Image 1 (cartoon, helix red, strand yellow):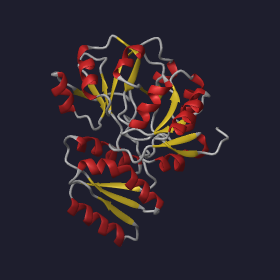
Image 2 (cartoon, helix red, strand yellow):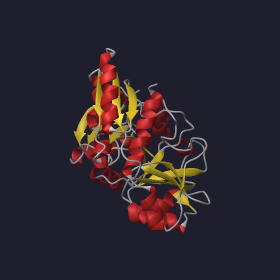
Image 3 (tube, rainbow, N blue to C red):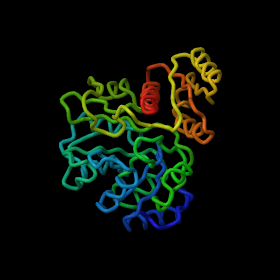
Length: 316
């Protein structure tokens, strides 16, 4: 455990970036803003710091971490045998909310991959993360900065609320612009497979690469694949329409429970941005049940439905 008070620093200030780099080089963990969620970051070259991530998050050590790069130009340092379609996709999307799983190079340590022969990599689309990565001249492993299986953080304060002094500092980069974790695409299979839904959709990937893409099956092979995940303290009930959500809400109130309705289904971009903050807000108000209206099962709505379904399963 880090015996230092947690600081929230301006991520746009050179002094904040410099202190973050100093801490990373001293095997400490930092909170890092990205466009998806805030990450708990460690230097990819520090086995000691990577081990701390698993301990702080209470994360199984066979659950792989995502390696964040400064640019597409760094891809060949960390991966080998990259398919042509994967290169096309990364060039089109990065920096952006897409993680690709590829064969690892000798530069990737076992602790990052959960002792697998593959590694998950992406280039984040956030000014603070990119400035830090470029100045650090190393990769960063950065799973979401929260305890394993709980609600992801989308502000610097969320990180401090969750992890306290287990993180040496947090770079404040504002509210995450996407709000849900990156799409994960396994590019080591004969047909690429989406393992986690995010802002980059199946339709986008197929259009860019001109190939078919499968959806995930089988055991958990990446972050967010567990059936129970993204769990608040409150119970989450799901409704397909606003009217049904209101009916469930009324019934809960009649039964003496505190409840709220989460319904941004008409605007999936805003829904994704507000999803985790809304669940955290309900917990802070000691709400018993959140009734969440499911968005249409298309585009970004697929990712939101995935997060809500797993949150609901975890709280029942």
